[in-house]
Length: 209
Length: 209
DNA sequence: CAAATTTTTGACCGGTTGGACAAACGTTAG
DNA sequence: CTAACGTTTGTCCAACCGGTCAAAAATTTG
Image (cartoon, protein in one colour):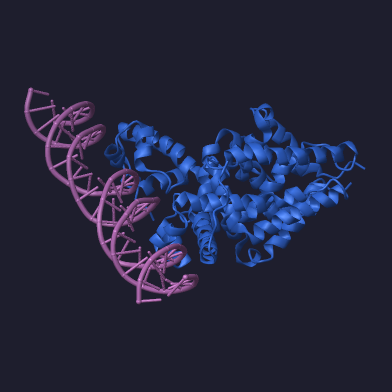
């Protein structure tokens, strides 16, 4: 267990926020090893030793960032609710995830970076908390299938596909923009994506008989 | 333009292959900046100066790796053919991409790493060669839609969704395994994924009326 | 064989990086 | 004022990292 939360002055709280904001910017753009304390300190508008007064090690910043991220990151899935129309629930889950990709791309990339490197720092959480949550929601989805509310398929892979398709617009943003080009790669791309994903997940590609 | 290909001895060709194989392993696991020449040299079974005799700079290794990757990486999309049944064509494209995620996960992660960092080294290729290819195939898909062979939707986002869902099994492998757990996270996960994706892309989630 | 060429290595270098530290600075309370 | 406490900075260090270099070892060529 971790000891009780340390007492902090007002300045400490504020400066720590500034540092975390700066670190999110730097880490998500360069990865953990690709980022230097100096870069974060400069982005936070303070000297390196000053930064190290608030976070004693580079890893502490990353760890704090990751802990906060995970809470908000899984919130949409937690909201997936047994009551309410199944198709509507799934549709709004997809929409919420896509909105997060649009509004919090740095968080998405930070997470993607961590997973890509083999999740050295958060593997236990993936196998514990995350797995539990997904299993729980998979059971909910299975219930919908048994009730004939949605087509029978694999709930786990369904969740993976929602993660993959939505986060793609944050993690692979450069590629998406490059391929769509100047005209279609503007702000409208998220609405296009939302329309497409809704159709894909509800109706698939078969032409309407 | 680049000068003509340099003449190379047999040993040079072989050792360069060994180095590239080792570098793929190291780069895909740690990213470019997270990898050291020493790590690659050790994985290749040679000393650092010896490795630098074959590739004069760390970036040269990465560049060579990336050039090779892109050819094989886009091969499945190039094969997407106008002749033949549209749904069958798309189904086998998805299958091929999923097989690549299964058989070449390191290549997938190397690519993902590059894109995540903003594609500093391959952006021109994304905006040029890749965009051209995707636009071309999007036109093919649009033809299928006009002919009523598949449902009308956005071809570009359709391609994105295929990339996202298939590459997810390589790039986010740790997470997939963690969530599926010991029993379902084994070799069978790719077959489960194939079945799921086929159903998703063809029929969507609406229950059969 | 010997000469020429290619390959391998140990030693080294300059720059960067994460982090330590003590001293200085600022603020607040008595 | 002064003492106590929190904050900031300049300096420094050891480890690491990409890359050089000269010289040795191995291989190829004449």
